[in-house]
Length: 471
Ligand SMILES: [Zn+2]
Image 1 (cartoon, rainbow, N blue to C red):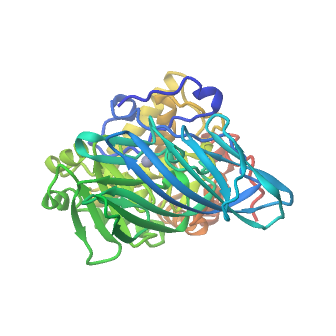
Image 2 (cartoon, rainbow, N blue to C red):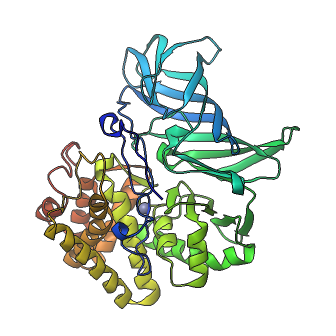
């Protein structure tokens, strides 16, 4: 699958990101795979320091045949300083119809590229809450996929292509999402399914509520005539959806999911952060995590069915429920904390499942990739703020080198201190944003070692540059 970047991408600060990619022995190297170049996210140039988003409430209708999305939305936020008069959001290519206050009074707004800028009727005081209402429509070229032949639509990463929001990963809010779907459709989205009702016109409204503050890039949904497999015996409840596969096949494809969750819970030192974990096989994706949800391709599902050892991508996405979702990189410069961790943890699961030789073989492949980067002059520190339009080599830094550096840390600290540090890091920052220095401090606490030289060597000078000093 090819990315077609808008021509203005660089100037606008759009960031093409490789979305999740498994690290199993069966999964080819990122740079070698046609599946690698997938995913695009609008990071938005928006400084959201003036406000804190509390909640998005939206009703959206993805019209699969038309390739169009229509939405109504409420955004609740609070001012973080006195005198906030103008607020801005990312809107992708969505066209804004009207913006009002909570009482329906129209507000003045402007739509510079990819941005919605709203003038408030009066300045807000520090701590004052406010609610905007708006409606919009659009024909996303990315971020929301439509497959009319399958009567399916699903999200890929760029949330502001289907919901006006703040794309920045450190901005967390709740999401109350009502999907308008053709009658008989099955849906999956973040959080709990709270209700479905018929609209009496061949459509249904499916309401999903995500009550844990979550970065918007982890919002997502899928709609289609899916067949479904469920395992509700234990928490979290497991759910898998597919158009091509039967429930029995889904049960086989995702047979190890509960064991993977159990393994990562122990490694994280914290329980799976939700009631349900849903895996959806969609028409095309390289694999993508969302809150309580993962998207994999039908092709991947078929491959797992015929090669039961092919578990890397499923494990990678599950690992993201902790490293990526529960703890999220504060900005994209620290993206390796999401992807390096998920890649490393998938290999750690493989070691747990099949023995050390499988882990060592994976480490050797990471090391080879890092050595090739060095030989080609393409090696970079793990943290680099100017990461605007990553190449395949840049992605290898974040994924393979990131995982390899975690392996080196494990070798440096020894088993007990390393895994204690992982648990400390995960527990201490659950539900918040992280920078690389947070991992360094946790590992230093667990080991009693000064790791400045290690992190300087691998993460680079930007690893903690804009963070306040640790306590
Ligand atoms: Zn990933």
